[in-house]
Length: 374
Image (cartoon, rainbow, N blue to C red; front, side):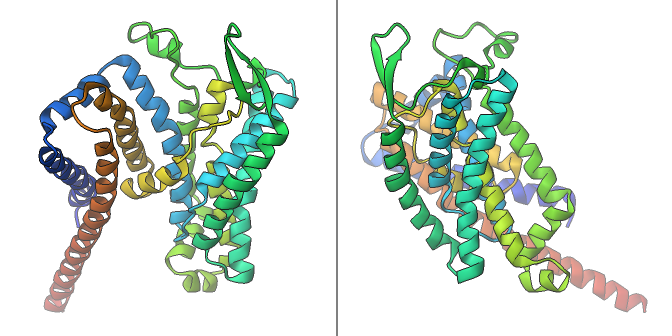
């Protein structure tokens, strides 16, 4: 199969999923008496504003990191459903640890990131250990660990580490962990953005964690596709028996894959931490579960995951303007997200079958030619 045809098949599946979601959502809007053109027009008009684009990028950043975390496990045929609990626990511990130290900016930021990655890696690695030592399926163990983290550990630790205070002029109170010194916070990217566009409205900041997310994506691509470890990872997921014969210890690879996935999951909460400077009593949740959808839509490819993260971020941010304008209920966004994932799974399976048929035909043609020449 030619490279161009492979590219077309790869792009056709997500495009078909998004198109099908638009058609389905339009039919639903028509059934409830809303005009889909007006609703989509309001969403696009809102998204065209600079401040909205910043909101979309800020929302896409943790979604992208979450998608990469899920994809690392997926590449070894593992399902890390526990990114939600891993990132919340890592977020909380890193926020508390960061508030206890005072270091130069580079060391302070590095310390917070290392703590977050270590907590995430340890918590996800526990699921890997359970799988290789006790045969516990990672889906079950990560779901249970999610419940323990979200409903148990995080709730208990936030109560133990809670520190009140005021924000800004003192007119607004906050509830959460003690604030981190300014040296522990990544600077925003407003200065870079304003070099090529107008000044942002006060209160809007493009998160500096966007750069960290891009670095994570590059490292993920190089690690999985350009290193011996990445080959062993993919081989173990594709055929663990053949990998074992080739000298790759599958049990160790399972623990490493889950730990690396958890380490990246630990960075999901850094966008919120670097913006607020503390762990709030009501952190943004659902990013871990959304990362599963983003990874599926992006087919575990860093560029595809970025595409999926931007789509989901656009829909999340646009839901508010629909409620404000009254053009459509904001719940239509949830429907669109669900239909996109369902359609993506079907479209990717169809593309996979088409690719297999094409490769079978090419192999048959090559064999026929070889026999004819013989």
